[in-house]
Image 1 (tube, one colour):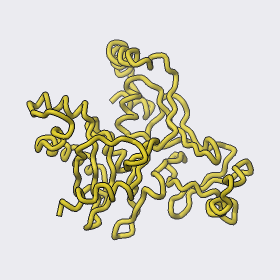
Image 2 (cartoon, helix red, strand yellow):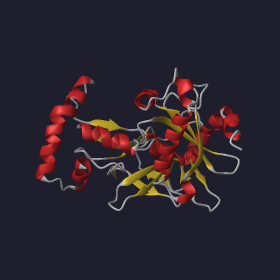
Image 3 (cartoon, one colour):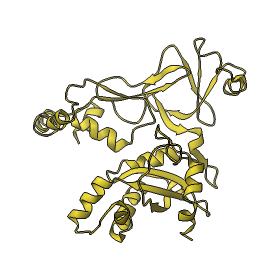
Image 4 (cartoon, helix red, strand yellow):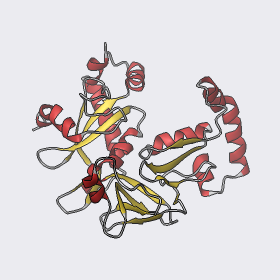
Length: 290
């Protein structure tokens, strides 16, 4: 694939020519239609973008880069422009000290960091240790090339019975790489197995259903169709192939209604997951498996 050859630094002349033709005839018109054809660079500052989505936008011709920022320190690390490879957020900023703790938490230190949280001295004491390291609450690791890879938030990780850490947000992003899955929430069921709540992408799944002759009337009706459940199961199995044995999803349920970000649901306005609220809201759905 051209984008992979580009990441590895060895695209051949023929590959470049084929991609140029595809870009002019297919990708550029798509970008022009959505108003993205004039963009020089797109910067993502949230959690890591699902690999499939990252790759797709770069194939379209968007110079997509990821950086790691937090309110208390600004830009911690960032990829360089030029269609970088997905999987990390680049090297740390030169003005910051960055290290990974034994439990994989990202720690940073610098004289220019904030002094304290407004009217919350107790929280300030908790996030700074005696050596002046600020505990971000985010998990990460170093790549072989010395770049920083974000694994997720500390509250988004659990330990399996063997004591191995499971990064739930990584699994969720892997699931959301599917064009047919809009949102995924990973929880534990009664047997301590990983369980996925799936919100389908109504547009792509309904297109698939029409092509396969699957009859449906609305979103809820579509999610309850046995053919759709079987199809989404195959998408989850594809994700499982890229996960260690103890990290595989054992069961799932498709949500009958689309998730609406807000205070009453398990997805916040910033698209973060409230797992406690998700478990409480869908507890009966999870327990029906057994």
